[in-house]
Amino acid sequence: MITAVLTAAGLSSRMGRPKPLLPWWGATLVESQVETLIEGGADNVVVVLGHRADEIVPHVQQTGAQSVVNECYREGRTSSIKAGLDALPPDTRHVLMIGVDQPRTPEIISQVINAHLAADALLTSPRYQGRGGHPLMFSVRLLPELKSISEDNHGLREVFERHRSEINEVHFDDPMVRLDLNTPEAYHAAYETYGSPD
Image 1 (tube, rainbow, N blue to C red):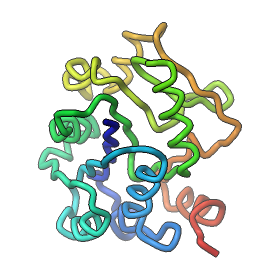
Image 2 (cartoon, one colour; image 1 turned 60 degrees about the vertical axis):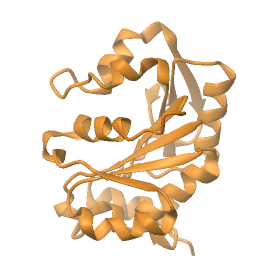
Image 3 (cartoon, helix red, strand yellow; image 1 turned 135 degrees about the vertical axis):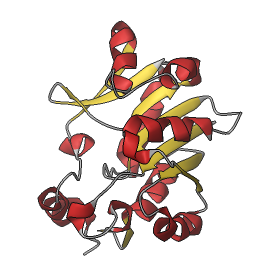
């Protein structure tokens, strides 16, 4: 089973509303992301919430995804990753990780999943022009290491450094694999390019 962990717990005061509730492709960003992950090949999705979780939970429920609340979200993204990992169904064999502010197409998700499975990879990373992107994908063989990450050691980066020679790289011509909606300007530009249903 492939479980996607969608982290959506962080603060987003600069956006005027929680990032998961930003409009994207005719829905909210969190709803669109869950739909994309399932359409791309994930068997189920765990959405990790934190900041203003009560406002976002109903939107997650509409998708049928599971939501968990990370009460420690202020400690950083690693705490949300760990909360998602703790909620994995027991029959999960591969974990796909992405942030709610990193929207992708089903085709990108599918390509990463297929490349990971075809290679029976330990960990898989999409690349664009020599730089890493998202989503990242891991075998559950790495679960003990993933659960031990920390902000002090740069989170998932420490796992990648430890297994650098084993990374399965998937090369894309599409810059969307590096898209990250960190600022209002980045969101508005990305919405015009990718997120508008018109």
